[in-house]
Length: 209
Image 1: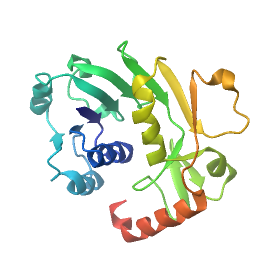
Image 2: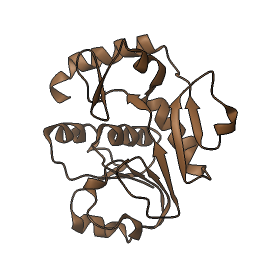
Image 3: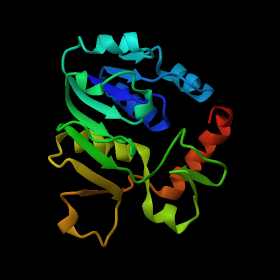
Image 4: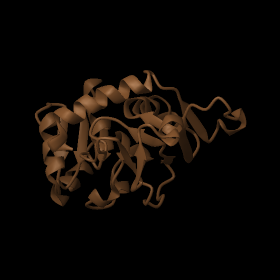
């Protein structure tokens, strides 16, 4: 079983859809404070493997569950009470502002992520409050597609022995001496082709972004 804190943050949503596609049972925690979150919830809310928790009372019920494999923490503002009262094997913390509070937590430094439902406009993506154009050198060199990133999270980080790791786009000059604290990800598809597909998605669902 997996739990995602910040279920309808765009990254949390992508993690959930991937886990559901792989037939895992997922609990998503989110207070549903925006129209975008309401829209995203409609896409997965009827999946029998998914349970949405949206109140402190429901959160308390999680403490009665059997052990949770991984808790993905994307947005700690969605927390109703202490996450560490949950019986969790591993906490993967993607929330930059969250203070580490458990020995079983892996803090992940995020790359410039892009994908469906990302904060964006016609010409680029917003990353940490800053606009990054699709045709910029920064995007070309640093951007990592969200599903490639999630593959790394699920297959690698869950068994990671360090308490902090940075995930970055593949860099030919990467120093192998940093391999214990940095993971580089290769794109699984041409970036220009990917952007074209994402732009088509954006045009189709622009009102939901």
